[in-house]
Amino acid sequence: MPKRTFGGPLIDVAGAIDMHCHPYPDLFPRLADDFDIVRAARDAGMKAIVLKCHHENTVSRAYLVQRVVPGIRVYGGIVLNYYVGGINPAAVEAALRLGGKEVWMPTVDAGYHAEVHGGTGGYDSQAGGRSQAEGIWVADKEGRLTPGVKEVLELVAQYGAVLGTCHLSPKEIVPLVKEARSVGVEKIVVTHPYFKVPNFDLDTLEEVARLGAMPEFGYCTVSPAWHYAAVEKIVQSIERIGASRCLLVSDTGQRHNPMPSEALRIFAQTVFEKGIPQADVERMIGANPAELLDFDNAPVPSAADIAWARGLVDDPCMSTPGEADPSGVATS
Ligand SMILES: [Zn+2]
Image (cartoon, rainbow, N blue to C red; front, top):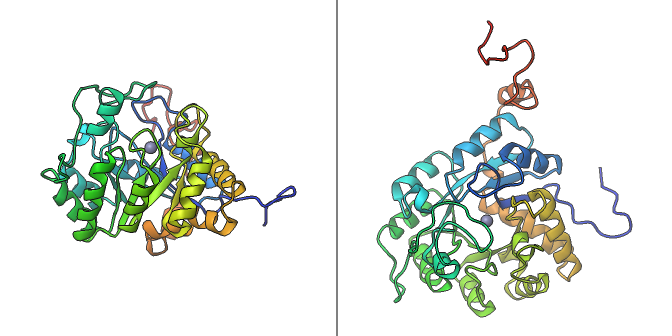
């Protein structure tokens, strides 16, 4: 049933996909956990969501949420921070074999992140995990990739996964994208280009987009608390690069931002009102991420799986009266 628009075109997130959100558990304070965020997205009619965590692999988390929240597809991936051993092909291989959809380069542990923020692990206003002076670099000053990176890229190519560039420097991202393309990686996302890191200039971003990487603009970048870029700058970039090559995501989960489904709706609506045609906005939250996730070829849950999920109590963490005594020991 069409939603009421109260007088103007409404960008609906029904059918949309959020490729980037940050639920609890996480070492940063979060607004809501995997279940709350996935349920809210499902209730908004979204068809898929990708869970991201700086501190651990989210593939198994996504699997478990998927088992108990029907009506939306839930995916995970792995961020190559120190918490998983950095550029660690074994961790990448396991994550992809378990169904991971995206391999993210280092975020808060990237060498460039540490250089800009004065150390790894946190942001200007948020302490998270372990802080140390030196972060992880994936390329040297001459743009030569460090050991292990090529093996990670080959795994991403082999599994048809998405490569996210995260908090690397633009000087690392350019050779990384070139190498990724040369080993057969077809899906590359330039994570929040105008966040404090990497903070691309538009010419370099366009160059990377021409190499086959898709800029992923996030609500978090323009959010009231951080506001690293104005929406107008993002609109200008989409106009130059083309909506067929761009993504809109929430990148939320922080307490000062709305829930991912609502952040994505606000962001998409704002980008539309600032001048991007409705069909292009819908493409950036719909067809483009669906293609990256290979959504239309994804196996769907069986009828038995759905029936099982429907039979669960609303919150699987709460015991149902009569099932267990207060000590948590089953009575039968
Ligand atoms: Zn993020």
